[in-house]
Length: 379
Image (cartoon, rainbow, N blue to C red; front, side, top):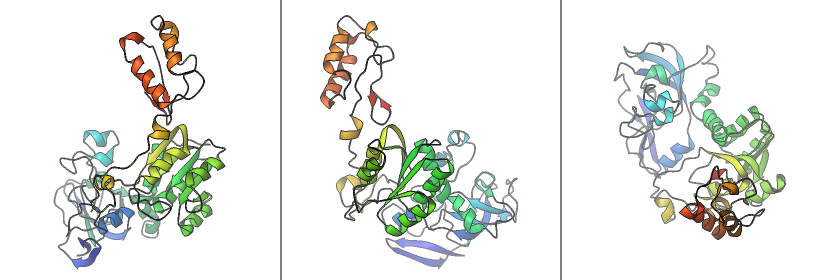
């Protein structure tokens, strides 16, 4: 069969390789008719991952079943199926919880498997004429009778659309809420579309490519060009300084600053800065555990310069009622009020002193005390 084979950084070619075939009774063999190129494929193509040479790309696939193993019951030869990129077994602890992206069976020794993907098992991809589908009854999404005519629509279900939808799910988006989406690539645009389906009151889409922003605007979103002015400032100005209720990161570790220089921390920091206190964020952009081709030491180790300064330790004033001072040891209430004056934001050093004090024996015990950290976390 012909397949797209990885030969090394920026080196791919169409080659004749051995046909994919049934290996286990639970397998199906699919003749691939549509497959997408994902941004994650570009990471691997550029040599920014541990993807091995000789592997076949392609984790967004659709086609027709031409053979099934003896243990396959639900899927039949001739069925049109979409193959969501994560491979699950359907019966492990994580799959039974619905966490199929973290299957404990399909990639032994790790959590999560996928077709033609770095560090996600040895399953070959579907940018080929044939694809072996493990645990076919679980992993094949059976399509309606119009699949052959609408396969360019249905292939979106393999990754792009559900990933964008999942970003809004992770963020906790509810009807009537506002959301900022960083990235106007296919996943970001699908996140915007998902937000509108869910009834978002305002959808901002941030990018620095005018053509992509034009698509976002055509969909009904408010485009934010991060090259014209800081994205955070624009969003804060358009939300009366409050920020959005929710935020989605749909770019990943190869995001760039306003000057076009790669900086893996930019979208994450901006995401938090433009989301209101107690808001929710969803991150579906790929951030890799190591990136040898990065331009700074942190990124090479799979780390980023995440700014905890203005976001993580900004603590709300401790107002009456949040700490029930009546149950504290004698004198504790006065100490608490002295450490962090009421009705204003505490300074970082004040907050640190208070937290330390509340953990000591001198504070006796605190019943139901909460210190609200920006972002909805509690200390």
